[in-house]
Length: 334
Image (tube, rainbow, N blue to C red; front, top):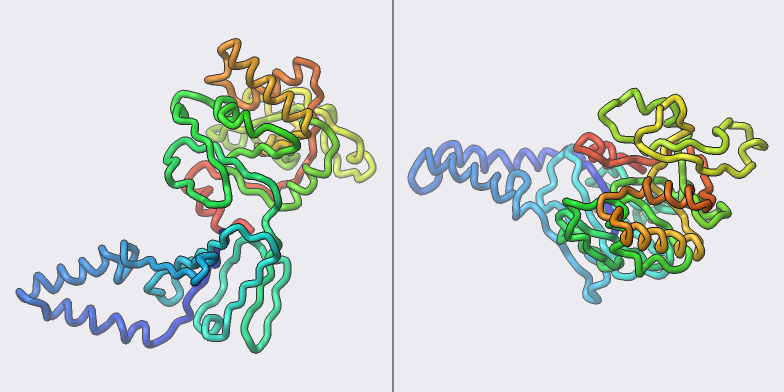
C-alpha cells in the first residue's frame, strides 16, 4: 500500500460551486422555509458533501482487480488530501504516472513509499518504486484487530492483549520464528538504511540502538524509554566504531547517565537466534513469567544465559508513535 498527499491548487470554480449551495440553504430554498434550509446545509456536512463523512470518500479499481485507488470525492483548495493506492502482490518494480491533468490541479506534499527514481516529461510525473522485500510478514494483532486487514500479510491474534505484555504477543507468533527474521515493535517507523545496517550486522541476535538518545531520557519523564548499557559507547570515530558492540543491560529503570542509548524496538535474528528466542519464550511460559513480561525481560534472560546480543548503533532516523502528537509527526515522516 502506498499513499500520496496533495493540496488542490486554488481556483475560482471551487468558490463558485459552494457559494450557490450556501446561499440557497441560507435563504431557505427548501421545503419548509428557513429552518429546513439550515438543516439541509448541516446535513450536507454530516454526510461529507462539504467535509468529512460517509460520502466524502470514494474508490476505483481496475478491471483485473490488481490496483485500487481511494480518494476524497470533494477536493478542497489548499487543504491536504490523501490518495491511497493498493496493489495486489507486486513482485517487480512499480511505475506510477501522474498525468498533466492531475499535476495541473494538485501540488504534491509527500509520497510514500519513497520512489527510487522520479522523472518529469510532457506526459506528467513518473515515479518508480522498488518491489516490496521478499519474505513473509506476520503481524500480531490486539486492540481493534479488525482494522489490520492487509492482503499481503499474515496475522495472528493476541486476544488477551489487555492483560499480557510484549513477550506474550511475540509468543503468539512463535511458529513463525523460523530461519532468519526481523522482529519489530508495531508502533515504530524507521528509515530503510536502519534496517539495511541491522541486516548487514553479524550475530545471532542483534538490536538497533539509537545513540543520539543517550542522556536524553530524563528530558521527558513521562516517556517510557528502553535504555541500554553496552560494551562501549558510540564515539563517532569511524575506525573505533567498526569494532563489535555487545549488549550488557537493557531496561526502563536504567539511570539515563549510565545508558548508552535507546533500543528502538527493532531486532534481527539469525536461524539460530530465532531458535534461541523461541526456546526462551517457551521457558518463560513454563515458569509462569511469560504473560506479563516485556521483550526487555526476554532479552535480559538471554544475556543472563550467556547468549551474546549484538548492537548496531544508529543516529536517529526513526519515530515511536505513542500519541496523537506522534501521529501528526508520522504524517511527515519520509
